[in-house]
Length: 260
Ligand code: T3D
Image 1: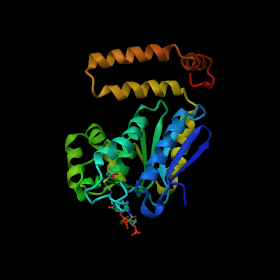
Image 2: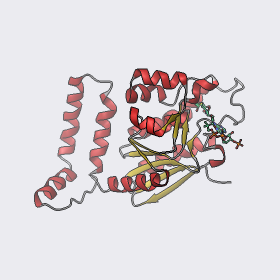
Image 3: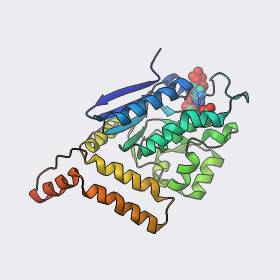
Protein backbone atom coordinates (compact mmCIF):
# COMPACT_ATOMS: atom_id res chain seq x y z
CA UNK A 1 0.00 0.00 0.00
CA UNK A 2 1.22 3.55 -0.78
CA UNK A 3 2.11 5.81 2.12
CA UNK A 4 -0.74 8.35 2.46
CA UNK A 5 1.75 11.21 2.92
CA UNK A 6 5.18 11.35 1.28
CA UNK A 7 7.80 13.16 3.37
CA UNK A 8 10.76 14.50 1.44
CA UNK A 9 13.56 16.60 2.90
CA UNK A 10 15.98 18.43 0.62
CA UNK A 11 17.98 21.61 1.07
CA UNK A 12 16.26 22.32 4.41
CA UNK A 13 12.82 22.18 2.79
CA UNK A 14 10.38 19.48 3.93
CA UNK A 15 7.79 18.66 1.28
CA UNK A 16 4.66 16.87 2.47
CA UNK A 17 2.73 15.33 -0.43
CA UNK A 18 -0.81 14.09 0.15
CA UNK A 19 -0.74 10.76 -1.62
CA UNK A 20 -4.07 9.13 -2.41
CA UNK A 21 -4.24 10.30 -6.02
CA UNK A 22 -6.83 7.67 -7.04
CA UNK A 23 -9.40 9.47 -4.84
CA UNK A 24 -8.03 13.00 -5.37
CA UNK A 25 -6.20 12.84 -2.03
CA UNK A 26 -9.44 12.58 -0.07
CA UNK A 27 -8.75 12.86 3.64
CA UNK A 28 -9.29 9.59 5.48
CA UNK A 29 -8.19 8.77 9.02
CA UNK A 30 -4.84 7.33 7.94
CA UNK A 31 -3.93 10.30 5.77
CA UNK A 32 -4.92 12.81 8.43
CA UNK A 33 -2.93 10.99 11.12
CA UNK A 34 0.07 10.75 8.83
CA UNK A 35 -0.20 14.41 7.84
CA UNK A 36 -0.28 15.49 11.47
CA UNK A 37 2.77 13.34 12.21
CA UNK A 38 4.62 14.59 9.15
CA UNK A 39 3.88 18.18 10.02
CA UNK A 40 5.04 17.72 13.61
CA UNK A 41 8.20 16.03 12.35
CA UNK A 42 8.97 18.93 9.98
CA UNK A 43 8.12 21.56 12.58
CA UNK A 44 10.38 19.95 15.19
CA UNK A 45 13.32 19.10 12.94
CA UNK A 46 15.91 21.84 13.33
CA UNK A 47 17.36 21.11 9.91
CA UNK A 48 14.01 21.99 8.30
CA UNK A 49 13.54 25.69 7.62
CA UNK A 50 10.52 25.76 5.27
CA UNK A 51 7.57 23.41 4.73
CA UNK A 52 5.72 22.82 1.45
CA UNK A 53 2.36 21.03 1.33
CA UNK A 54 1.12 19.70 -2.00
CA UNK A 55 -0.84 16.82 -3.55
CA UNK A 56 0.07 13.85 -5.73
CA UNK A 57 -1.68 13.45 -9.08
CA UNK A 58 -4.28 15.88 -10.37
CA UNK A 59 -5.65 17.17 -7.05
CA UNK A 60 -4.48 18.94 -3.94
CA UNK A 61 -7.27 17.32 -1.93
CA UNK A 62 -10.98 16.66 -2.48
CA UNK A 63 -11.64 17.08 1.25
CA UNK A 64 -13.03 14.52 3.67
CA UNK A 65 -13.16 10.98 2.30
CA UNK A 66 -16.86 10.46 1.60
CA UNK A 67 -16.34 6.76 0.95
CA UNK A 68 -14.79 6.06 4.31
CA UNK A 69 -16.66 3.59 6.52
CA UNK A 70 -19.51 5.22 8.36
CA UNK A 71 -19.24 8.78 6.96
CA UNK A 72 -22.67 10.10 6.03
CA UNK A 73 -24.78 7.61 7.97
CA UNK A 74 -25.30 10.02 10.85
CA UNK A 75 -23.20 7.91 13.19
CA UNK A 76 -19.89 9.71 13.68
CA UNK A 77 -19.63 12.95 15.67
CA UNK A 78 -17.99 15.11 13.01
CA UNK A 79 -17.21 17.84 15.51
CA UNK A 80 -15.21 15.39 17.56
CA UNK A 81 -13.38 14.26 14.44
CA UNK A 82 -12.56 17.86 13.59
CA UNK A 83 -11.18 18.48 17.08
CA UNK A 84 -9.10 15.33 16.97
CA UNK A 85 -7.81 15.26 13.41
CA UNK A 86 -8.07 18.68 11.77
CA UNK A 87 -7.73 21.30 14.48
CA UNK A 88 -4.27 20.25 15.71
CA UNK A 89 -3.03 20.34 12.11
CA UNK A 90 -4.54 23.71 11.19
CA UNK A 91 -3.33 25.27 14.44
CA UNK A 92 0.12 23.78 13.96
CA UNK A 93 0.36 25.18 10.41
CA UNK A 94 -0.48 28.68 11.65
CA UNK A 95 1.64 28.52 14.80
CA UNK A 96 4.62 26.84 13.14
CA UNK A 97 7.61 29.22 13.35
CA UNK A 98 8.66 28.15 9.85
CA UNK A 99 7.06 29.45 6.66
CA UNK A 100 4.47 27.01 5.29
CA UNK A 101 3.82 27.11 1.54
CA UNK A 102 0.72 25.52 0.04
CA UNK A 103 1.34 24.43 -3.56
CA UNK A 104 -2.17 23.77 -4.82
CA UNK A 105 -1.66 21.54 -7.84
CA UNK A 106 -5.31 20.78 -8.63
CA UNK A 107 -8.71 20.83 -7.02
CA UNK A 108 -8.83 21.84 -3.35
CA UNK A 109 -12.31 21.07 -2.02
CA UNK A 110 -13.91 21.10 1.41
CA UNK A 111 -11.42 20.55 4.20
CA UNK A 112 -8.76 20.17 1.50
CA UNK A 113 -9.31 23.83 0.68
CA UNK A 114 -9.12 24.70 4.38
CA UNK A 115 -5.75 22.97 4.68
CA UNK A 116 -4.48 24.84 1.60
CA UNK A 117 -5.61 28.17 3.08
CA UNK A 118 -3.83 27.46 6.35
CA UNK A 119 -0.50 27.92 4.57
CA UNK A 120 1.33 31.23 4.93
CA UNK A 121 1.75 31.60 1.18
CA UNK A 122 -0.56 29.88 -1.29
CA UNK A 123 0.63 29.18 -4.82
CA UNK A 124 -1.73 27.51 -7.28
CA UNK A 125 -1.43 25.78 -10.63
CA UNK A 126 -3.36 27.46 -13.43
CA UNK A 127 -5.67 24.43 -13.65
CA UNK A 128 -6.37 24.35 -9.90
CA UNK A 129 -9.88 24.89 -8.55
CA UNK A 130 -11.14 25.87 -5.14
CA UNK A 131 -14.45 24.54 -3.93
CA UNK A 132 -16.25 25.08 -0.64
CA UNK A 133 -17.95 21.74 -1.19
CA UNK A 134 -19.41 21.52 2.30
CA UNK A 135 -22.94 22.87 1.85
CA UNK A 136 -23.33 20.81 -1.33
CA UNK A 137 -23.48 17.74 0.91
CA UNK A 138 -25.27 19.29 3.87
CA UNK A 139 -22.29 20.32 6.00
CA UNK A 140 -20.91 23.68 7.05
CA UNK A 141 -17.45 24.96 6.10
CA UNK A 142 -14.94 23.65 8.63
CA UNK A 143 -11.26 23.07 9.38
CA UNK A 144 -10.75 26.84 9.45
CA UNK A 145 -12.59 27.92 6.29
CA UNK A 146 -15.00 30.20 8.17
CA UNK A 147 -11.98 31.80 9.83
CA UNK A 148 -9.76 32.22 6.78
CA UNK A 149 -12.32 33.19 4.13
CA UNK A 150 -13.72 36.43 5.59
CA UNK A 151 -10.22 37.49 6.58
CA UNK A 152 -8.70 36.81 3.16
CA UNK A 153 -11.45 37.90 0.80
CA UNK A 154 -13.98 39.89 2.86
CA UNK A 155 -17.37 38.94 4.17
CA UNK A 156 -19.44 39.14 0.98
CA UNK A 157 -17.11 36.88 -0.98
CA UNK A 158 -16.74 34.50 1.97
CA UNK A 159 -20.51 34.13 2.20
CA UNK A 160 -20.89 33.65 -1.54
CA UNK A 161 -18.13 31.03 -1.63
CA UNK A 162 -19.64 29.12 1.31
CA UNK A 163 -23.26 29.33 0.24
CA UNK A 164 -23.11 29.16 -3.55
CA UNK A 165 -20.34 26.53 -3.33
CA UNK A 166 -19.28 27.14 -6.92
CA UNK A 167 -15.97 26.03 -8.36
CA UNK A 168 -13.53 28.93 -8.20
CA UNK A 169 -10.78 28.78 -10.85
CA UNK A 170 -7.22 29.58 -9.71
CA UNK A 171 -7.04 32.86 -11.66
CA UNK A 172 -10.18 34.12 -9.94
CA UNK A 173 -8.87 32.92 -6.57
CA UNK A 174 -5.74 34.98 -7.19
CA UNK A 175 -7.79 38.01 -8.24
CA UNK A 176 -9.81 38.03 -5.01
CA UNK A 177 -6.82 37.37 -2.75
CA UNK A 178 -7.19 33.69 -1.84
CA UNK A 179 -3.97 32.82 -3.63
CA UNK A 180 -0.70 34.71 -3.81
CA UNK A 181 0.40 33.58 -7.28
CA UNK A 182 -0.86 31.33 -10.08
CA UNK A 183 1.69 29.47 -12.18
CA UNK A 184 1.55 27.30 -15.27
CA UNK A 185 0.85 23.74 -14.10
CA UNK A 186 4.33 22.37 -14.82
CA UNK A 187 6.01 25.31 -13.08
CA UNK A 188 4.06 25.16 -9.82
CA UNK A 189 6.15 22.72 -7.81
CA UNK A 190 9.57 23.88 -9.09
CA UNK A 191 8.56 27.46 -8.30
CA UNK A 192 7.25 26.57 -4.83
CA UNK A 193 10.40 24.58 -4.04
CA UNK A 194 12.73 27.31 -5.31
CA UNK A 195 10.88 29.86 -3.18
CA UNK A 196 11.01 27.54 -0.17
CA UNK A 197 14.75 26.95 -0.66
CA UNK A 198 15.38 30.69 -0.89
CA UNK A 199 13.36 31.28 2.28
CA UNK A 200 15.39 28.58 4.03
CA UNK A 201 18.51 30.72 3.54
CA UNK A 202 16.88 33.86 4.95
CA UNK A 203 16.71 34.94 8.61
CA UNK A 204 14.13 32.39 9.65
CA UNK A 205 13.76 33.76 13.19
CA UNK A 206 12.24 36.87 11.58
CA UNK A 207 9.60 34.71 9.85
CA UNK A 208 8.68 33.09 13.15
CA UNK A 209 8.23 36.46 14.84
CA UNK A 210 6.40 37.96 11.85
CA UNK A 211 3.99 35.02 11.86
CA UNK A 212 3.40 35.51 15.58
CA UNK A 213 2.54 39.18 15.01
CA UNK A 214 0.28 38.46 12.04
CA UNK A 215 -1.48 35.62 13.85
CA UNK A 216 -2.43 38.05 16.61
CA UNK A 217 -3.23 41.00 14.36
CA UNK A 218 -6.80 40.50 13.23
CA UNK A 219 -8.13 40.03 16.72
CA UNK A 220 -6.42 43.11 18.15
CA UNK A 221 -6.96 46.84 18.18
CA UNK A 222 -4.18 49.08 16.87
CA UNK A 223 -2.69 49.92 20.27
CA UNK A 224 -2.46 46.27 21.28
CA UNK A 225 -0.96 45.31 17.95
CA UNK A 226 1.60 48.11 18.04
CA UNK A 227 2.74 46.81 21.43
CA UNK A 228 3.00 43.24 20.11
CA UNK A 229 5.16 44.54 17.26
CA UNK A 230 7.36 46.37 19.75
CA UNK A 231 7.83 43.30 21.97
CA UNK A 232 8.62 41.02 19.04
CA UNK A 233 10.86 43.60 17.39
CA UNK A 234 12.90 43.83 20.58
CA UNK A 235 13.54 40.11 20.17
CA UNK A 236 14.28 40.38 16.43
CA UNK A 237 16.55 43.35 17.02
CA UNK A 238 18.71 41.29 19.39
CA UNK A 239 19.07 38.36 16.99
CA UNK A 240 22.35 37.34 15.41
CA UNK A 241 20.60 37.41 12.04
CA UNK A 242 19.69 41.08 12.39
CA UNK A 243 23.32 41.90 13.24
CA UNK A 244 24.41 39.89 10.20
CA UNK A 245 21.78 41.53 7.94
CA UNK A 246 22.98 45.02 8.84
CA UNK A 247 26.67 44.09 8.70
CA UNK A 248 26.22 42.53 5.24
CA UNK A 249 24.31 45.58 4.02
CA UNK A 250 27.05 47.92 5.21
CA UNK A 251 29.84 45.75 3.76
CA UNK A 252 27.90 45.40 0.48
CA UNK A 253 28.15 41.59 0.66
CA UNK A 254 25.62 38.76 0.72
CA UNK A 255 24.40 37.94 4.25
CA UNK A 256 24.88 34.49 5.79
CA UNK A 257 22.00 33.91 8.16
CA UNK A 258 22.03 31.29 10.90
CA UNK A 259 18.33 31.31 11.83
CA UNK A 260 18.85 32.73 15.31
O1 T3D B 1 -15.38 13.61 8.76
C1 T3D B 1 -14.81 14.64 8.41
O2 T3D B 1 -13.67 14.58 7.94
C2 T3D B 1 -15.52 15.94 8.60
C3 T3D B 1 -15.06 17.01 7.71
C4 T3D B 1 -15.68 17.30 6.53
C5 T3D B 1 -15.16 18.36 5.69
C6 T3D B 1 -15.25 18.16 4.20
O3 T3D B 1 -14.22 18.15 3.56
S1 T3D B 1 -16.78 18.03 3.48
C7 T3D B 1 -16.41 18.07 1.73
C8 T3D B 1 -16.06 16.73 1.19
N1 T3D B 1 -15.65 16.80 -0.22
C9 T3D B 1 -16.56 16.91 -1.21
O4 T3D B 1 -17.73 16.98 -1.02
C10 T3D B 1 -15.96 16.90 -2.61
C11 T3D B 1 -16.39 15.62 -3.33
N2 T3D B 1 -15.76 15.53 -4.64
C12 T3D B 1 -16.18 16.27 -5.70
O5 T3D B 1 -17.10 17.06 -5.64
C13 T3D B 1 -15.45 16.04 -6.99
O6 T3D B 1 -14.77 14.80 -6.91
C14 T3D B 1 -14.43 17.15 -7.30
C15 T3D B 1 -15.16 18.44 -7.68
C16 T3D B 1 -13.50 17.41 -6.11
C17 T3D B 1 -13.54 16.71 -8.50
O7 T3D B 1 -14.38 16.32 -9.56
P1 T3D B 1 -13.77 15.51 -10.80
O8 T3D B 1 -14.87 15.35 -11.79
O9 T3D B 1 -12.52 16.16 -11.24
O10 T3D B 1 -13.31 14.08 -10.21
P2 T3D B 1 -14.29 12.86 -9.81
O11 T3D B 1 -14.47 11.97 -10.99
O12 T3D B 1 -15.49 13.33 -9.11
O13 T3D B 1 -13.36 12.10 -8.72
C18 T3D B 1 -12.30 11.21 -9.10
C19 T3D B 1 -12.30 10.07 -8.10
O14 T3D B 1 -12.05 10.56 -6.79
C20 T3D B 1 -13.67 9.39 -8.07
O15 T3D B 1 -13.44 8.00 -7.83
P3 T3D B 1 -13.68 6.94 -9.04
O16 T3D B 1 -15.07 7.17 -9.56
O17 T3D B 1 -12.63 7.27 -10.07
O18 T3D B 1 -13.48 5.61 -8.40
C21 T3D B 1 -14.33 10.01 -6.85
O19 T3D B 1 -15.29 9.18 -6.27
C22 T3D B 1 -13.12 10.17 -5.92
N3 T3D B 1 -13.37 11.23 -4.96
C23 T3D B 1 -13.45 12.55 -5.19
N4 T3D B 1 -13.71 13.20 -4.07
C24 T3D B 1 -13.77 12.29 -3.10
C25 T3D B 1 -13.57 11.03 -3.64
N5 T3D B 1 -13.59 9.91 -2.91
C26 T3D B 1 -13.83 10.04 -1.59
N6 T3D B 1 -14.04 11.23 -0.99
C27 T3D B 1 -14.00 12.36 -1.70
N7 T3D B 1 -14.18 13.53 -1.08
